[in-house]
Image (tube, rainbow, N blue to C red; front, side):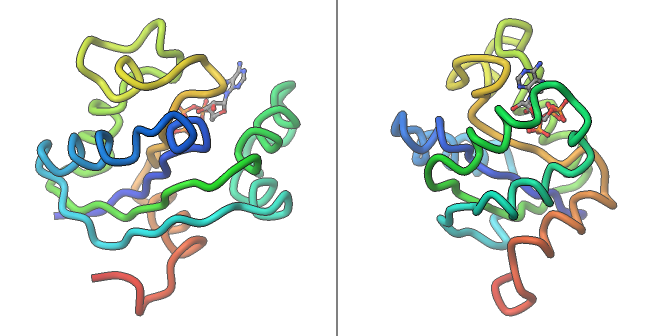
Length: 137
Ligand code: ATP
């Protein structure tokens, strides 16, 4: 098995979807290895999304990701990174497949309810950003 990292973004928390999203994740065969509610500072969000710092939406992304709490988690499953990207659906919910988390719970391209790591390497980096070894089970 391998691992991926996810966040329920501030819109997903504000809209009351924590329980439904975690239920869908569990029902889809992912084991929760780590889990917490936390709020990112501006410095946290700028560092987490540093790969996007030249993009026109970077300021908006940092503003959005810091406006309220998020739920961070590490998930384990065979083929975790790819299967989780399939479960969440396309970045823009208008393009997301039926039954995906973004189709069900996202409101726009920017406010798209969940994050999923895009590689095993980034999953490890992002997991270490949010969780110590003692918080991973
Ligand atoms: P994530 O990294 O959150 O799982 P992703 O890999 O599907 O999303 P990326 O292209 O890596 O998408 O963009 C990271 C995040 O930046 C998106 O999830 C979204 O919140 C935001 N974003 C991307 N493109 C835009 C855009 N054109 N306008 C506003 N926000 C955007």
